[in-house]
Length: 141
Image (tube, rainbow, N blue to C red; front, side):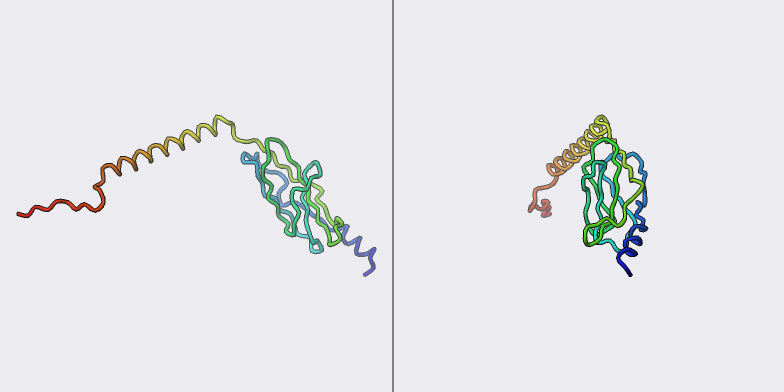
């Protein structure tokens, strides 16, 4: 097949995310998946500022550490020479809005209360237990 025909075949390849819209994300991380392109030797995930968020051989990326905001992502499939052979047309848009501080603080104090109750029960139980190695007194009669 002539080189120009291969180029036109590659230009017709499509790359698309499995999901392009997500519910509001409270944790600041997301896993993005897209279809596989047979001729691709690597995939690149770019954010809106064209910074690389993922580069690898698999059509899946895990992005973490996102602060509050809206994040559109685009994926590219590249051949062994590093040329882009397919790119997403529709971005995957992730909206991050972390849990409010009052909610996080409330959960922290509930966890602290449970911890303190367990600590008290363990300590109280150890004081009431018989010392190790002592047998109950037997009545010789």
